[in-house]
Image 1 (cartoon, rainbow, N blue to C red):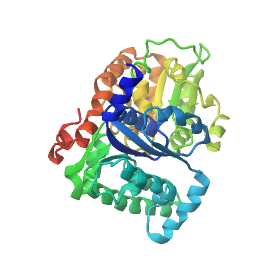
Image 2 (image 1 turned 30 degrees about the vertical axis):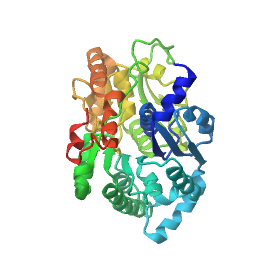
Image 3 (image 1 turned 90 degrees about the vertical axis):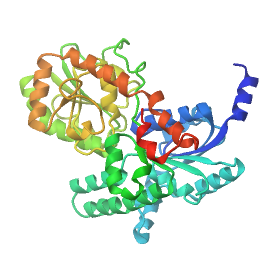
Image 4 (image 1 turned 120 degrees about the vertical axis):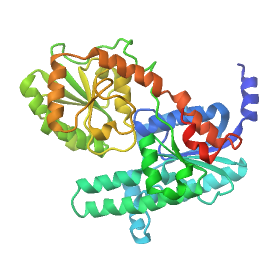
Length: 421
């Protein structure tokens, strides 16, 4: 296609506003994987005008990459420390801290101006915190992808903390749920990352149940493929257990801390050559300290996670706090790995336990399962796992539900849960 044709196509595309709380590139962590594929998908049909925050200086280098999928765009740097301090005012106003964390007069001005300038009639909001910028746009068609029920996640955090953080997290869960319900009432459709997440929110917000649905995440199975050869990052005689994920994220920190201290030492008594690799960016100090334990290796950020999955004996996702769907599990399954998950990590994933992955209900089960797996790999389970991902977790087919919800000719509130596939 020549540039002139491309320009004509761009002119006939309908304008759409997309609001994302974190720059949707690179697709290297859960929310950015989903927002990246959502942006690319929408850009096929619409001229997407994007407004987003950048909360990591390293992500500034990707601004030009993201612009290639957009019409007009607005990128605002967000300093996490200043944002946390600024959010304290929410305590005096009975607002969720999450909302004030992302509050921005500059962002609001750009959104208002763009809606007017581009005559925007369709808006997609990614995450509840970004809905504040389009609350005053009831004449537009608004679809929100909550992704997870963040309010419930804060309640889970509260159960793991002591006062005063337990009180603060409980408050955040309560006030954020009230806001989530408000937004769900106002928007034309609310989407989540899995049927389990959608069903739970219907119970929490019954007044909006007929407008609540979901679309599953997907996996790039060409990229996460067991057929691609990767150099082995491990020593050949070691038995490798791997965990992948962003290591500044508290549920991941909690998971590897528990596993490294409670489960892995018992596995290593049986398999002295077992190693537990924690692979992920920005490891917290607490995670770095785990590297002092026998057999525990903390890599920090790596250029490519696939070699660590490809050559591992087993992947684990021992999360004790979780909402939504775990991309780390899907990616490992796509690589034809045997994956051992906790009940929390399994939630939202359509996979048969015992056939496509393994479920460990507690630490004792986890020790037994891993000890057996390190004795003998289960290759058939990995093959079945990949087939499940190929069949069920495809971005193109899963994102069709968003297309239908944005098109008034196709949209029907009563059908929102019938267009998931």
